Every structure is written in structure tokens, then in C-alpha cells.
Image (cartoon, rainbow, N blue to C red; front, side, top):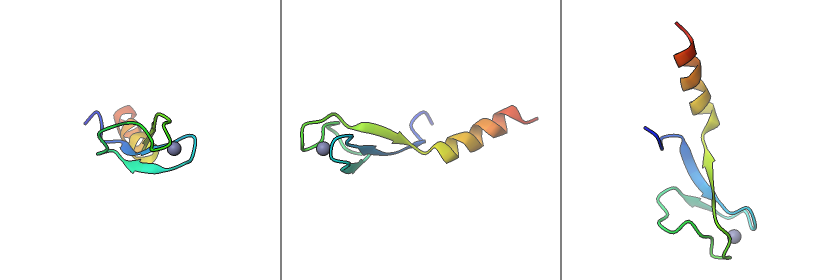
Length: 52
Ligand SMILES: [Zn+2]
């Protein structure tokens, strides 16, 4: 549940993207990968929680 909003990992340097299944969070260029979240899905859930 905690990780359900992660869609992929992205390199801030060369914009290469990896799946969240990637074991090493390092790009082939040596830069650490950033985790991208599915904000749409997260927002939906937060809305649900706020509503009655
Ligand atoms: Zn890279």
C-alpha cells in the first residue's frame, strides 16, 4: 500500500526512466534515480479520505 503510488524511477541527469522493480537505484550514468509517484491516484485516495 505504501508503495502503490510509485510509477517509475527517473534519472534527473539524463532523463532515463526505470521501472520501480529496479534493484539498484542508480542510473547507468552514475546519478541517483528519483522516484516518480502517480500523483493522480494519490490525490484520488486523499479525496476519498477527506469526504464523508
Ligand atoms: Zn542518468
